[in-house]
Length: 380
Image (cartoon, rainbow, N blue to C red; front, side):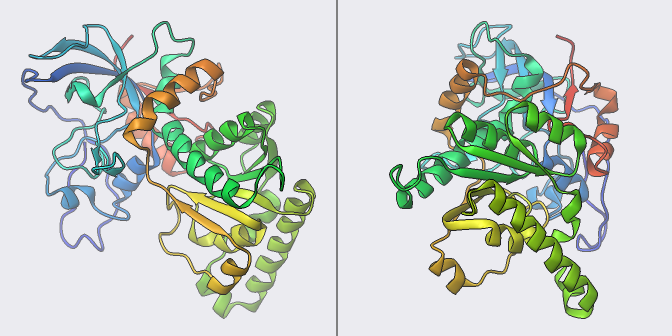
């Protein structure tokens, strides 16, 4: 768990996970006692530890917050008026706050007050928060743990992005879209899904292991290392002429690569979870009538755009957050039936419960090559 910062939250540094005992009563009406089994370390957990963009404890008005919102668990006991049987394996897919249309506004184990995440040996959740895994699933529990947030988010984002692109570009105009992404787990999930819609896909990463996995999945791997100065620092651009020249050269070289893989059109859909430092290159890499899709703000919440340019190019910017309640079961069934699942290598490390603080540090320091950092909470 984590605690709020002392003093001025604007100057507070990062925090670390602490292991503590919390009281847990019996499940009430419509509630079930669950033991989390596996979880996936998500970027929102790193944001919480960094206290950026907010101190979630202060935002929630709570002294303790248990993190974790992507994983699988096993039902131990149900309270009154529950139907989930003991031993049922479930995805923690719906313990969030949704608006009246079923779209999420706050996440369990992050910014939703009164909730506890899955970084706990036991927990009580509403039965309606849990979605049973498909019976006799072909996929492993660690795979489903990673599916929970990233693949459901990718499903929702892709539906909107692809739909927006097709509004302007019919199959007669362009039968096959070019879908590109800056490389992370949700981006990989999206381009995997795009391939199943017959898109020509590419993902950009500086990590050799990720590039190898992309190639094995039939996704064009684009090595970012020759273009590291694509990430623009606006302050340095203003005061260092040499830096501006290097950024422009890196961007031109990158755009040459994009054009060479897209029949000189540019990306039809660009999945961008990075934000501020790469938005200039992302926009320039986009084709006319192209779509930029994001559901996150990894390195910046604010971006600068030339609206006239975006209008003339007829670019569409798609912003989504998480996934709609009604999308969960169809996405899970599609993943089960079509093998649209996280790929975890046989040698992928699974962190034990006591090693989760190390996992948090390794992830924050960029030491984890896997797209999907997995931890185990209880034995299966």
